[in-house]
Length: 141
Image (tube, rainbow, N blue to C red; front, side, top):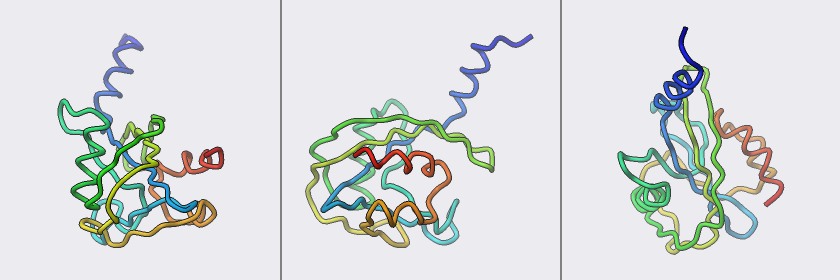
């Protein structure tokens, strides 16, 4: 019989670790639309990406935002981590980083479209399925 601890380690090892930014400005949050033809194409997501080997959440977030949006983050208020299992079998551990200070105007280097949206708009957008449960908690910002 396989031990419970081994099963948990196996599941966590298969998870892709991701860091995403909740960039706030004027009561809105920045969303990015994945390019058509990509995995989960045209779904909306928070900017960020996969952690590389040995990379911290903060280092990943800085690198990804610099590469994808040409912005630099100065301050992360807090980080909340959630796990998501997708219908296609993919498993993610997502660290949501609340960013209140950044420099530069977001410039789209990697997405179909980027858009500042209100929380009301966000709740009806076609976002990645792993983000849907988290979005319902944003009212407490």
